[in-house]
Image (cartoon, rainbow, N blue to C red):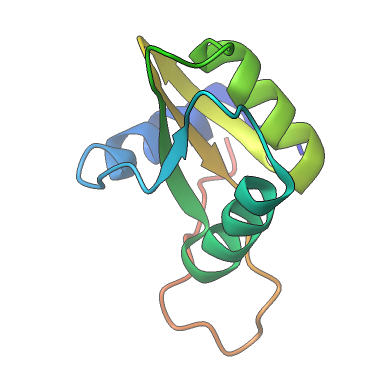
Length: 102
């Protein structure tokens, strides 16, 4: 999924208010972390994560790998934090994020 610059800006502003729920630690990106990320994206669509200092990953590479494994789009990487977006496939989801087209 490719996001436009306006869509990224919209998602970045929404991400300012959320806390990181994914943590990449010394074990790196495990199957359990990927599952947690998929579940979080299905429930929330917009997810923030952080990479701990003792991890073998930096935020950019962790974000890229999680995007690849979860079909999410990278929104932002700043320092040790990253934001991912993937629209939910649930039809009855009440708090869906509606992105601007252009």
